[in-house]
Amino acid sequence: MRIPFSGRRGQGGSGKIGPILVILVAAAIIYVLAKLIPPQIERAEFQDFCERMTRENIVGGIQEEKLTDVIMAEATKVGIPIKEEDIRISVSEQRVRVDIDYTKKVELIGGKIIDRRMSVVADVPRI
Image (tube, rainbow, N blue to C red; front, side, top):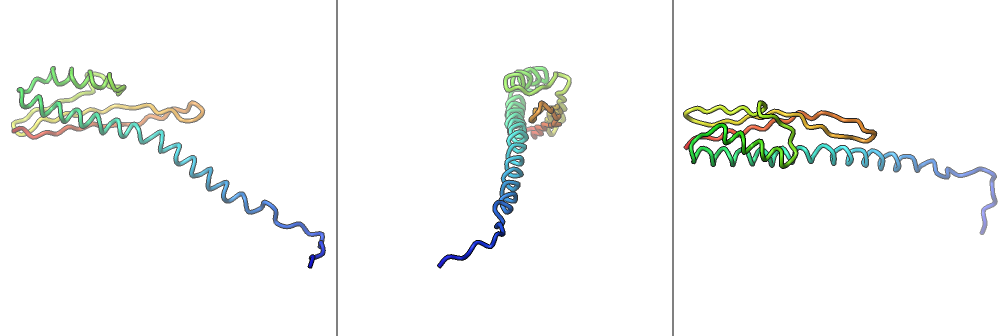
């Protein structure tokens, strides 16, 4: 049995804006996370390196210049924008601490660049 045409149109397509909006928001979130998470991972790996080098330097005797040179070489190798004066090493009887503050530039869509402030702290107890 056929239903006669009433002349009214259905809701054709009016419910499609919601899913499209959800997809766009999800894509934007994924994009931003894909841009912001890699510098955090890079910072964590660099911090691990600094802690390892500080431990090795403690065992071999504290040589601040040598430690600074090794940290600068690794930073240059992995693309972390630091200068020698950004590296602060403090030595006490109980510990050796390396503090590094730097700014990493992250480029977004449209060429917009945001500055991400990063800090690396390697606080190693002396044996």
